[in-house]
Length: 266
Ligand code: NAP
Image (cartoon, rainbow, N blue to C red; front, side, top):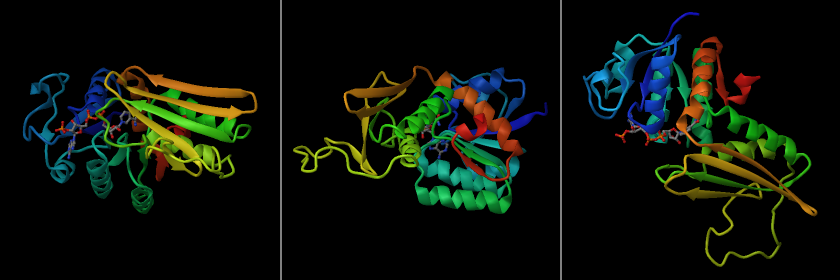
């Protein structure tokens, strides 16, 4: 079991700090550096609320990747910077493991091409919780039999992107089984704009943002005389860390981009 040296981008964030706590306890992963918007030149162990890990902090992501020896960049930041960091990591032969959500299809396509060009593994997973991945797979299976479906995703009110990456990924998986069609009444009208949620290939996605929530999703299927609800709740961000660890180890064996944790679970 060889050591995997990691850079974590976004170490003070809710997910990034959880990733540091996971690395602190892990026998295989080690922390080489962090990329943060603040605290350039300081050490992780001296920052309030972060684990006692001896690793330098860089605000300049490119300088970090040039100066630090690392195998994997774990990005848990924002869509704008996550995308930049992922491109930079590939440029410097560091394998990206990206939990940041909100990349466009175009950005994902570009990162896939870059990853293939460099023959360097990349893992991008909109949800690292194993239960959430199963919820998505079960939803895809159910869509074979229940083509009418709406997705309700609920997150904390600090989340930047809507709908969530998990909701979009769920809709994509359902789309593979479901014939595109508009749902609801033919003459349905919204008296308040947005009341019916986002339209993805005729199915609707509803995003709730409230304090007190972490990450939750219900996929509700309706048919004659019955409904089926597939539901997943992440009550704590620890729920994502076994997936981050799995991605950080498996990315070392990959030479292309993998989108979605389900491809690693199989
Ligand atoms: P968060 O608490 O807001 O953390 C984001 C962190 O990124 C903040 O500390 C922020 O710093 C930092 N940041 C922003 N720009 C940066 C830059 N240029 N360089 C370095 N750090 C930068 O958000 P979160 O809840 O941890 O979520 C982070 C990302 O993970 C989001 O995209 C979220 O949707 C996603 N997420 C993914 C999963 C999954 O399973 N894949 C699960 C939950 C969340 P400041 O504090 O200075 O702004």
